Length: 289
Image (cartoon, rainbow, N blue to C red; front, side, top):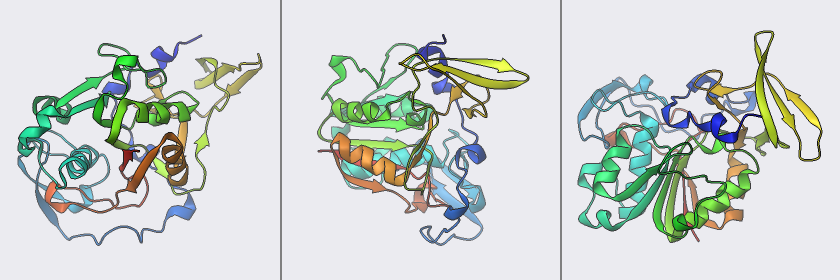
């Protein structure tokens, strides 16, 4: 059977296919939660590399509107924006983080992009991976990681974690000191329930059959299940989508895990090149209670 490590080891190198990830149900077409769209081209200061950028507003999609210098997209810049808001009370570029930031200990979960390198220079941040050192398995973190961090960043990772995902949220809380900040993104719908694609996943492998990928699972009680029409982020054979979160489901998971002050951030920050055309799959922050 394919190991969990083999299934998830590609996470750090993936760029998600936005149209596949952000597919809303037909009931989600209401964009009333979005802010008015500014016209034309937006000039902004990238909060990752501090360069001045120019981009058409229409290009400011979740994984688009990239900085010409560091290639940061809206999702990456939003992580920096929200982290600085939660830690320092104002939106700052990484290069302007205050001196006390060096004493804040943070952890990333397979973060990719220039922001991970720069955060490590300005704060006590360590990027971790599932498949190599420094290694973090969010379903079973080593004891040295627990209650040791002022902030945690997770960018489009939790949708790939094997079930039960409630364990991952509990462990995210366990990584943080009381009052610590969680900043994360996942694709999510506005439906009432999270959809688990493989709720009884236990021992599994993926085979090709007639040009199609098939997941074969042996449940804990010995039954065999087969699943087709699999969704991969980054292309078949890379990282398998385990679930499509819902906003309500995310809030319930965070509350159960002991987080408070949970916020779904639909507000723009034009100064940093951040704008959300849709009310789903926006970044989320929460505080460890």
